[in-house]
Length: 295
Image (cartoon, rainbow, N blue to C red; front, side, top):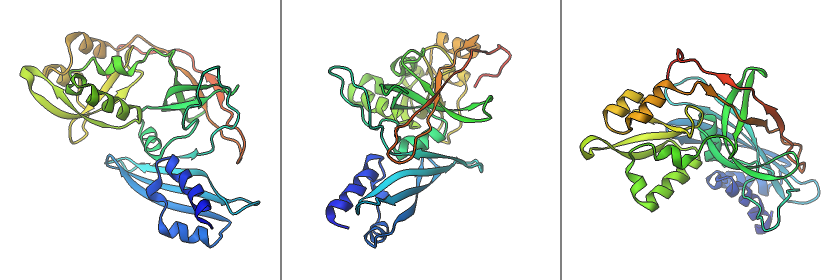
């Protein structure tokens, strides 16, 4: 394997934020010319144990290697149950671009960090293509489809009543007062991170707490807030400490009487070299009664 050929496969790892997984042991096996290689890799994600298995295959017509997909399993902190899924790395070849439109990065492809956060149940912001090849951006969240009896990837497009900036600004957060820190916080939320932020409460008291986005609870969105032990704080606790106002507290307590789910797409990538063709399903409205417990 030449340096150019090694760079070719390394770049595929780097594109999904897995440069550290391109180890000397893997390079040794690839230089030996193996036809296929399953390469394990593990890391910690906010206390969750993450195990990854990369599937690498050598081209039949050259010495080039391709990273076709990776399997990921996470074991959430303090929870024995394992959650797993398969993520494909090939981007679609035929993308329809409008005049003046530039191709988006990582179409239909998750970085390791986003994949781990997605499996943890937090929404991530990513680029996708529809069945006609048009690209778009949306929030993706892992949800259980009762009809199919399994988890699917639900996509919340711009038409859905959610805006990250609107959701975050409902809370008294110090980072919102500094443009640079605000931008970094937003970028972190887009990756699906459980982000450590500074809340400012009664009397100017500051407290570091974890926060993540909650898309479907109320119109415009909200945050799930946790203490440093990652125990979720109740709406009453947030209100008593001065981190949210009375209006938001009431909305969170009452919740919405209706919650409209987005059009969901269960991505099923084709074989190597094929174009990703999503299945589209419209989920009907679901009513939430006041008797349901507040998350």
